Image 1 (cartoon, rainbow, N blue to C red):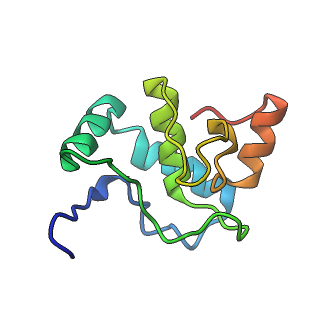
Image 2 (image 1 turned 45 degrees about the vertical axis):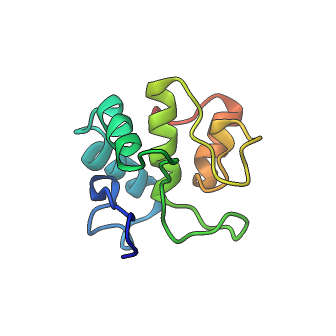
Length: 118
């Protein structure tokens, strides 16, 4: 890793990440990864990991390709708890529930008012 680059692995999905469907992934990610964490503590730690800079959630999915990723689920969770947006770089204009890397079912559900709780 380049100097100054730091990783917070507690937001990474479990070993099931590429072997389950979307609904189970979201359910397990929220229950097994996010639920045990305190969003305020996570946000404070991420900010501390980027002194003088901007903390960034990273994965390898790119918006616009039809993919989704855990980064968007973590961003939604942080935004919901902290009451401030956690936008995708280049998509800062979008409301949180339309994060371009949320699974389509969640974006559609949020638009209709039936999104799963985050």
